[in-house]
Length: 270
Image (cartoon, rainbow, N blue to C red; front, side):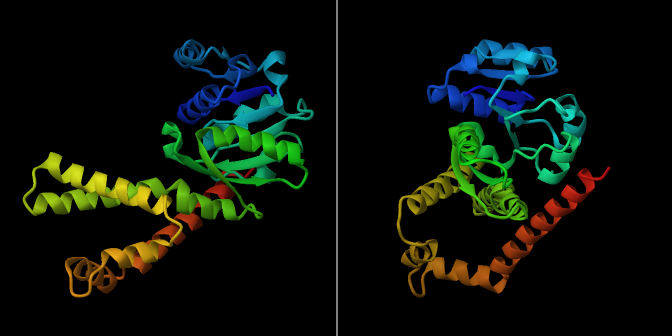
């Protein structure tokens, strides 16, 4: 399989690094990147071919990964319009819908939309995927191979659910970072120095996530096991409930999902 990346930023770099780490032949990877510094870095670090503009060699790929910023995608894909044949085009541009991308590509439909998240940068991401009905099983497998290089994958049956994926896992790392930030601040308020408060907060979240990931039981059961009747954890959880924490989280995720739909409409306008 030959893969061409349009854009060589952080996520493209993570994907390339993940593929190479898994044994993918770097000579089968090409990157179209405007930055001379970015091209040199990718070529030196991974041994891939990096060019500043689309050429016939870059076009000769099986998978084309669109890894530029959403606001730049329309102009970036213009050189591909009418030149695609059997390539599977995978977009990781947040918000942009396949119908709009396909239109910009001259009616091309062999498209997959993907929503990875930032833990992909350390190989611990999760990506939501949706494929146009015209994409074959082999095409879906190729797209999944690329994204699975940086973590786990989840396929959704409806493109609209990609906005929900964005709200839950795409934006989700920021929610977790904010919780760590708040827990750390609470520790500082209780008298710990900054380094100690950070270690307590960060290692607690990391350990709890590992425990949940390694358990067959739902988080609710794990939570109950930590909560003794009349104890300290129960007092904290009652405070969360009184402040409406579940509803706060639900509203926040709904707001992110709604904003994702709005961005898709805005970015896709002619």
